[in-house]
Every structure is written in structure tokens, then in C-alpha cells.
Image 1 (cartoon, rainbow, N blue to C red):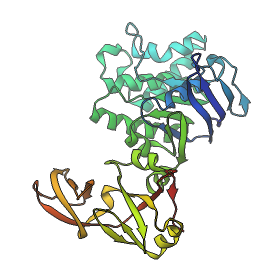
Image 2 (image 1 turned 60 degrees about the vertical axis):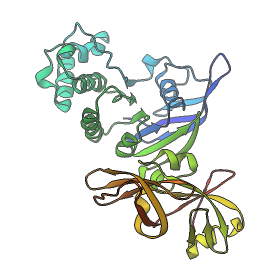
Image 3 (image 1 turned 90 degrees about the vertical axis):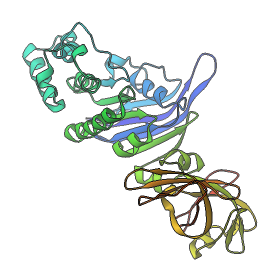
Length: 354
């Protein structure tokens, strides 16, 4: 496989609308990078620029040390798996997987061996004589992946490949993609709006918003140390709770509660004394027992955990408790925060401890 470098990539359409701004990313050989963000953030546009399906307005694209910015798609040695399977309905699964190699006029025996090897990896050996209409959605997506595998490209591109599958199939196919990556040790660029896919698949995540890269890091880095309010609110399910608080005399003062700061928190927030900041608390970092009163309006049992949604005096709050709870609407629960995140109210950037 190969490395991939995106250097200062811009995408500006003919109507002067800019979809991607100064995108920079180095993808290591064999790395699986996931681009994640809401619809319209520029992630698919970036992938299409790598594929050659969109012209690059500015910057460079380098694959395996070679500048391919101006090269047509067929010369970039990449393979793309789309959201829709794009299979030929009149062809068998074998013919669909072999089609691109046949167009290249490769040796028939080599084609046969490559198709059988890909089918074995994807568990499709007993499906090769069937037509796409005879397969499930998950199997069709595996055929689309097999069509990419047989080409042995330098880079694999995935554009929301699981969007058309139901929840159960998404989970199963996601695991198959992860196993496929480990087995092939392939360089992959994967686009999704689903943060669960991003957190479970990625070696590193690129979180995007409105055409800008917000943060690049491992799944744990984005979850545990979000760079700004956007990343903090986007990564994590249920999303992080946010509260406007004032730093005052070693405390966080809010209409709904007052929290004592630790020594490390006091040091980090010294320059914010007397000012308002944004406090972020993940639902799973809220524990029962404390001096903060939450009035319950819904209780959602999820098996090993329970989501408790409620209100304080001003703010709504979601708590995720690690046990089965049976709170009723109107119940009052006393809670406390065992992990906090702080953000500058004006810049929205994270305030780091230490």
C-alpha cells in the first residue's frame, strides 16, 4: 500500500462557493483515516478530490510520493466504494468483481485467482454465480468492496458505504471492514457522518465542520480531549452537556449549581477569574450523589446503562448511569460531575489543564 498527502487543498465551485478550506493531512502507509462531520461539512468533497471526481482548486495531492493533483482518476491507482453499490444487475457476482480487470485485459488466470482470493476474504465464495438481486444489502456492499480489492490499489476510498444498511447490518459490515483493513494492511480514507463508525474504525479521525478541519487525532483524543466546542458536541453519544458558568473565587458559579474547582482547574482557569466560560460534562461523567438537583422528565433503560433526561433550574441535562434505573417523571435526583471540560466562551477553543 501507500502513503497519502493532502497539502492545503481547497475546493471552490464555479459560483464562488468554497466547500473545503486549506485541508492538510498526512496518511501513513496502512492507516485507516475517517473523515467525519455533519452533512455539508466538506468530507465527501474532499474524498472526491482525492478520487479525481472533483477538480482541486488549490493545493497538492501526493500519493506514494508522486504528485497526482492533475492526473485523471484512472491514473491515480485508487479504488472507491460508494454509498450505493453500483453493481451491474445483469452480471453475476464473479463478473461484477472481475469487470475492471477484464477492461484492463489482464490474464484470465490471474483474474480468476484475484476474484477467488477476494471472495474468500469477504465470505462470498458460495455467492459468485448469483446475481446482485439475489443478495442482501450487506452482501452487495461486500461485492462492491471485493470489486475494489481485486484491483490491489494504492489507496481505498469509502464514501459512506454503510448508509443504506439497517442498524444490524451496519454493525456487522463495520466489523467486516475493520477485519478487512487489518488483513490487507491497506491505506484507507473513509467518509461518514456516523460518529460510531468513526470511533470504532479509525486509526485517526478528521473532524470537519463547514469546510474546515476542526481536529485530527485518535478516537480517544477526540473523545477525551476535544479541541473546541464543535468537536466536544459532535463526538460522543449522547452529546456532551454544556453550561454557561462564571469562574469566581475558586468556584464555578451557575444559576443551577456551584462547583468547587480542583487545584489543577484553578491553575488553568486563573486568567478567567470573574469571567464566563463554557463548562462541558459528558452524560457518562455524571454520577448519582452530590449537591446538584435534577428533576427527571424521562428515563430510558438501555440494559446495562440508563439515560436520565431532566432539568435543573435553567438548563436541560442528560445523565448516563451505569445501572438499571427506574426514575419516574417528576423525581428529583442529586448528582455530581466527576470529569469536566472547559471552553473559552469567545473563541470556543478548549481550555487545557496543566
